[in-house]
Length: 224
Image 1 (tube, one colour):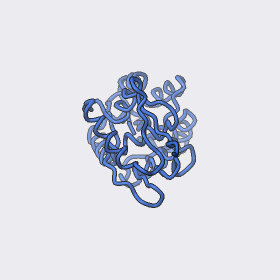
Image 2 (cartoon, one colour):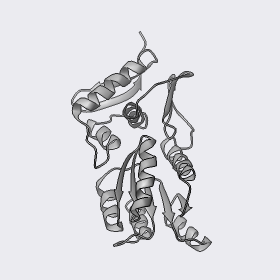
Image 3 (cartoon, rainbow, N blue to C red):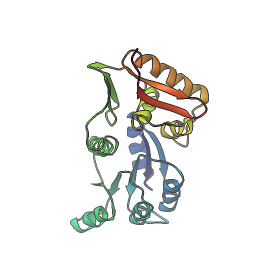
């Protein structure tokens, strides 16, 4: 999953980014509301972690503009602003959850997992494609009851394809979902991840099909 953090406190941003990257997510960070608004307009994200007290544009305005454009990604607000009235206001603007600083990273991670689970599997705890089961927020996958041993990049490819099962996913979409601004993914690196994922899925009845010149598709394979 690719996550944007909009937070002007560099220590908090660094800590939150580190814990998300440790969980296998691609993470970008911005320090003001104007840059957050531009990033959300220009790049596809799966989730926004948003501070309210941002310079140049308040976080509430960023949120309102995001929802006004039809953006449906989950938004977790982290802020020092307390009080029931403020929480109600932000939730009414379109936030999905609200966390008051200071907070424990364990609680932050739990809330992120819950929001991503709700978004990615639309209320279903796991995605199931034939014998393959994928827990998107938990970064786990199984064939029947046997856990798959996947690297973070391999799981990222699987997650991106599983969220669009039966539909085409372009190479550009895969790269966008796997990389943050300060990372690069070469064509060779993507090809290696897809090759290794195919090998680990072999025999389970679900595979990655190449649509030459267009991209890839996760689908159940025909028998016989």
